Length: 461
Image (cartoon, rainbow, N blue to C red; front, side, top):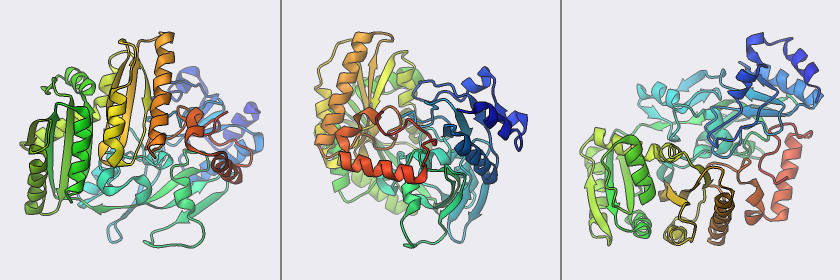
């Protein structure tokens, strides 16, 4: 690794404030939401596509590992510099280049945050449906890299469904442009969709063309408490079979309910085994009210219901959605170590997965919290154990693998939205055959012949 010449080359076109070398500065870019830490040798802060191109040409020539990085909110370690080298932080590339109201499109740089984009669209009565819980910090570029999901995915789909085109820099420094503003385009391979969700291993995204939708004028939230977690999963299936597709359908188990209630100091029904939050949206009050009441009717006749009601207004609805957003921060605040399974199964199999997890045997000191986007079969299973307790750590890893195996056995997958990164890669053979993995490696080599771009991710070592 010819780091000295790399840094010398950077100084030819970047000012010193955009080349970070001191340990304190480097440490700021060494961690993400996984709480794992890898210190890079240098952090580079480009402000244009041309600068990214020059950085990558230099790195390719000198064989320097480069890790693209956004807001560091990832939960799979996809933006961590596990091989050292350079972190390519895209936080300074944060311009909203264009909002094209006529075509309902936006062009943004990768460092734009989800919340900043939503705020810019509000006055135009447009919105970008992918809106992760960490929207204040998570960047659009990071969401594209991970093909992020979110609470509205049950109705609106995931990030990939809204990316019309990309500008990206390859590992060699070449600039490519894929897709465009057209609603249809089948000219050649769909390289846009290939790069979306590739976790920064194929290219560095520098501009993104996003599809927008009219902002729904009306929202209603239904709050449901149940005395049985598996019954809650059954209820979710029943709601979806009613003919109404909510824009959000979320599930929290008893452990999560109690932890969030204490963390936020809010009055939740702590004795309930499950909390289900359902949101419907639309443009006409009469339609949205009718759908909300129909869902309430489905819930009221369902076995195991403790309470069903509509939120009294926007303030109460937002309070409950904040409860859902704070689930992971609340669990993290307990001061325990954790392992997480971001598993996904066909949503009609969700009750069986929830029941299976609930019946897992484990040490009393270990707890398992289950919450997530149950409307699309995506559960976040959080296994909590005492810090530096290696016996519990071994047991937690055993539980994690058991959950992964069960999800795959049910026709599901290892990760629904967080990505493979470093946390899931050792389990990849549970889901992918050797032939499937090999073709992915060949694609990686075609984009990145020297293997310098975000190395150490996705594929087992």
